[in-house]
Structures are given as C-alpha cells and as structure tokens.
Image (cartoon, rainbow, N blue to C red; front, top):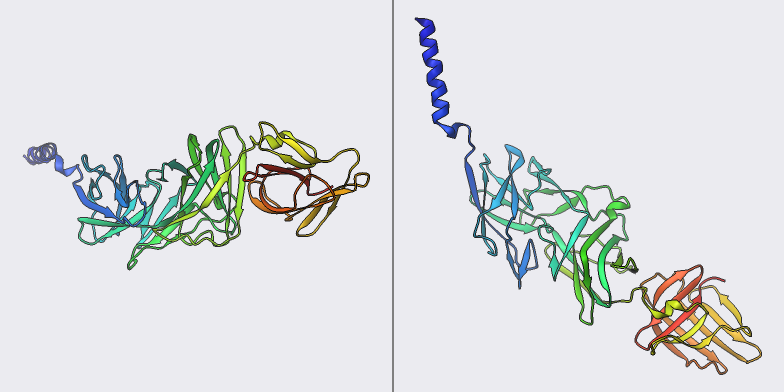
Length: 386
C-alpha cells in the first residue's frame, strides 16, 4: 500500500511539471529606454535627436545577476528616440544596463567591467552602429535613461582619392581601446576608467572605411569614439587610400575629449602619393601647374650642394660659374603628410622668387624630401641629409 501511494505521488508531481511550463520558463521583463541627444550618440542621427536602430541590444545586470541578460529592441521601435527592450527577468534592484550588449561584460558590487573595440567602422557624418557605449541605472525596473561614456573625435578630410582606413594613435601612454570600468553608483554622469595596459597596440585605434570613402572639395567627416579625457598630449593619424598609399599627420596640441561631446578638427588636405612631383628625382624647384612637372631651378653638373643642420635646416644649390644660389630653409624632423613653412631665397638669377610658402611633405626617403605647395602649384625636392 505504501509503495502504491508513493507511485501515485510521483505521478502527480510529474504531471504537474508537464502541465505547468511556467516552472521551466523564465519570465520576461521590459524596460523603456531613452538617451542623451546633445551629440550624435548611440546608433545613428536625425539632426541632434538620437534614434534607436533595428537589431539594437542591451545587457541588463543587477546585484544578484552579475553576468547580465541580453535584451532586444521591440519590433516597431526602430527609428524612435524611446524604445522598449525585453529579455529574461533580472531579479533585484537596482538594475544596471549597458549599450551595446556585451556577453563578456560583468557587474560586481556596482562596478561594470566592459571593453571598447579596437576597430571601428565609418558611417557617413557619424560613427558606426553600436560603437558608442552608454550605461543606465533603473530603480523602478521600468525605465532606463542612458548616458554616454565617450566623446567623439572627428577628422574632416578633403582632397582626392578613396580613404580605405585611418589609424589614430595617442601621443601619450594611454589606452584608446580595451578593458574599462564604470562605477554605476554615479551621481549625474558616469565616468569611464580605462583599465587596459596602455601598450603600443592599445594606444592605436583603427577606422575601417569598407570599400573606400571618396574625397572631394567638400570635407568628409571621419569619426572616432574615444574614452573621455584622452589625447591630452596630441595624436598621430595614418590615412591609407585604396591603393595602399598613406599620409601621416600629427599634432602636439592637447586635445580635450569630453564625454558626450564632439571635437571637430580643422580641415585637412589629403594629397596621396599620386602627386606628379614624385616622378622627379633631381634636387630643386618645379612648376606643377601644367600636365607634367617642369624644372624651374634644379641641380646640374655645374652645381654644388650644401646642407647646414639646425632648426631651421638650410639647403643650398649653388653654381660658381653661373654666380647664383638657391637657398631653402625648412624645419628639422619633418613628418610625411604634414605641412611646413619653407623660406625660399635666391642669390643671383635662379628663376625662383623669394618667398615663404607652406608645403606638404609628400615623401621622405634616404635623406631626400619631396614637398608640394598645392596652393601655388610648386614642388620642392630638398635634402635633409647629404
């Protein structure tokens, strides 16, 4: 009899589990999410209004759920400034949220640990979808007001060619991507702390421009998402076109990247290595206004070369038989892609007028420098060492 009762009780428990699927299924939870709109943030822009995108996901944590759960945007909320996100119920208040969702992120004792990507993607006039991280705190289990963690660094490029990629390197010992943490018990606004070791790799972040972004007379914006308070010692950018040519530009000016703000740089002219001046090899000055470079005053068999070090350096082409000399003064340690002031002086008749010009260093190789003054259509080939 006791065996029969035990069998009946086991059968009843089994039937109860079969007929009550709620026992094994986790309940859903929904948050209404919004964010800052003072800058182009999050996914894509509509003027200054921030709009959610299709496929957006967030991670939701709580003191009892350190690994978090993934929540997805509700169908029909794409393109709205406020959207609903639903996912498995997370027990316990307060609730902490991270955008975009990150399965590797965690939250312990109100400190959220996450990672910033080392490769970002070009988006016209903005940054790539899902590449600007945000966090939010909810005490009611219903609403999430997201705050930006990073700022936007924007290069404005014009010229010719197709930009394939851009790498940005900090001049300071600081990480631009990798592991980071945020104290979620913040008051007002969150502060991101980069915990990543600032080695050579993590001081440089890349922007992938896909098949290439065409440059023209109107500047194109290339945006990087960067942790706040970086680039205080300046930066260096390496711009690569779809033919593998590159330009390097740098600045020692302190740049203040602020949370939720866009820092736009002055327009830069991109003249890749397609310049006709690079087909010339003799030292001297060239007229670039025609279909091919024409020599104005170049080194000949009658000439002597001289170079005096210093800052500025002084390069001289002189001819004793012809009683003339061309003297060009230029800064020491010039970097490819950057513009520099050159002081040009003639002694006797060289065919070159005295002037101070600004020219871009196109190439520096084996002590020889090719510089182009695109405004006046003049090229210079000088020596940085002899």
